[in-house]
Amino acid sequence: MANGVRPEIESLFSDVFDFADAISLETSRGDVPKWDSLQHIALVTAVEQRFGISLSMDEMVEMRSVQDIQNVLTRHGV
Image (cartoon, rainbow, N blue to C red; front, side):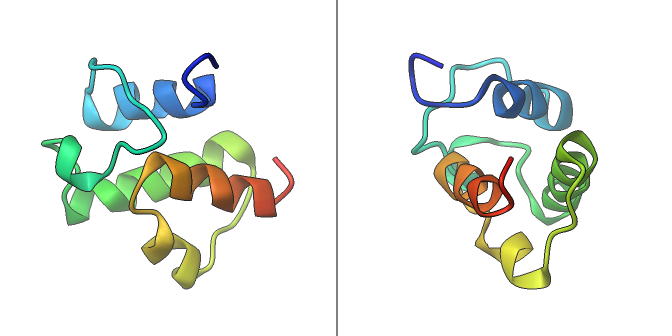
């Protein structure tokens, strides 16, 4: 976690987006070519399954960067 990104999130980006580049807290939709609306739903589903949480619609919309995802996870206590 040298770059501040949780390893689980790096793994999710690899799985969901087939994204092999390095990610940082600032990585956002514009940085990930396959991060479109359909893949965003896949990301939300993967986050919920991986961490055993249920996200609200507001949280789903809020997740626009790696930092946003980590903020949501922190609020859920994971």
